[in-house]
Length: 69
Image (cartoon, rainbow, N blue to C red; front, top):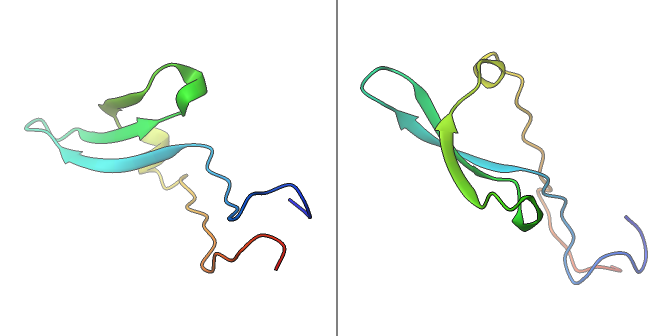
C-alpha cells in the first residue's frame, strides 16, 4: 500500500466466504470464492472445524477513501 499502488479505492480481499446455513443433518455450509485465478469459481461446502472454533478473522476498512487523499 502506498502512493501510486492502488486505484481509486483500495482494499485487500484474499478470500471471500458467506455463511449459507445448516442442512437437515446439522452441518454448517459456506459459499466461497478464492478468486478468478484459482479456477474454482464459487463453491459451496461444509464449514471446517477450524472455522467453528472461532479461528476466523474479519478485517475491513470502516472508512473507504479515494486513493492519494
